[in-house]
Length: 558
Image (tube, rainbow, N blue to C red):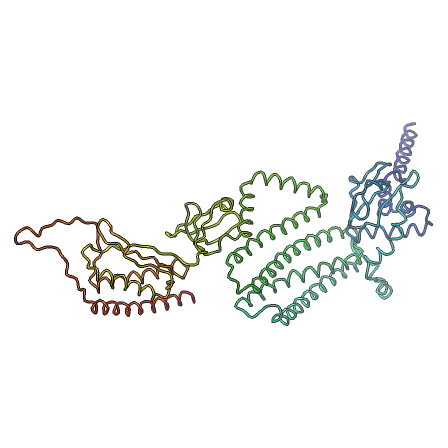
């Protein structure tokens, strides 16, 4: 009795198990699972798998079922049945173009709409089958994927194609090693070919300049990533012909990751080439701000390229692209709110480069900060003050502040007053003024047609001589050197003429005291003596200006 019960239970379990293995075409998931399940090694039954094709002869349907499976494996595509809809009335809005249409909603499902837009299942009656368009596309897809035919080798070496070790065909392993070897040889050939091409067209791409070697070095950096990309796409085209099936998914994942990485490297280096080429074309431009703009543009675009590469890498691991984009958008909004100041500074940077209120090296006054613009960054502008201290001003504040660009002045104005003693004779005052005028006109760095040297008034302790001149060179350091030469010549002129500079003082009259001598100075007022003194000082001043020119020429060369 117990034996009978056990046998009955065993038969019922076996019957139930066989029932679960029957073809099921009631939903997209059931149809795709039926197709793939009955072509597995442990459950192989091509006749049952072929039922996913509607109204086709059995032999033809089996052939299509096997080829379609190999198309999936040849593209490195693996089904995730948990994500395939199991609803018998599933309505898909995705067309093969990848766009969504709400006017043509149909009972169809595309398992891989991006990779295989012509392959889909659709509902016919109460069951789901592969569409007629799928049937028509299978032969072409199969021929495009499996480009290499080993039938000739199979006839010549039949044992090689039948022998296997632990379930792996020996011929596949041998061909795989041959493919790797050919890839290495092809890469070596491509490297030499590209180097030859770049050297041949070198003189046509870049102008002869000091930066030519740098330009060629930069453009030669494109060779390696370009060579690797070509090898990767060749491997992706040839690898399916080895019929590695499920292993293809692993290899294609590695190749896709590698292609993404090398595309990022290639685009980053290509950007450097473009920017370098642009700099070559504008090498004679006076715009220093443009030179500062190039690194900033490179950083921004490089960041964008890397971000796109990271998002693409995430999608390679099965994450939905729309989810990635939505997450990136939400994350971008969150970052924008968290870094409002950084965004404002970035906008301020853009405004600076568009409006160009100053150039690198300009002497500017921004609020309480005065100095030379050394660098314009993504967040702030660096200004070095006269005492060599560094100020970093946020670009958002600069875009809103009043900028006094003294570097845009046509001339640098220099206004000062000299005080000489009250007892200086009128003849010496006139001679001193005339001498200073001649020094200004002889100075190579002053605007000789626009200056003022006049006896301007009476101070508390001195007679005032106003000097108002304009220096031609706008560089701050050069201006100070020019002032130095002019000041030194004025002191020499005063000494030669016997003119003394005054200082705050009080005079006590002592002439009425017996045996006391007054403080009255003795001045030489002879016109000829005054003229000779001016000529002597002017000659010495010309020697100083020649030294100044030589020193400035050396600085420019350095």
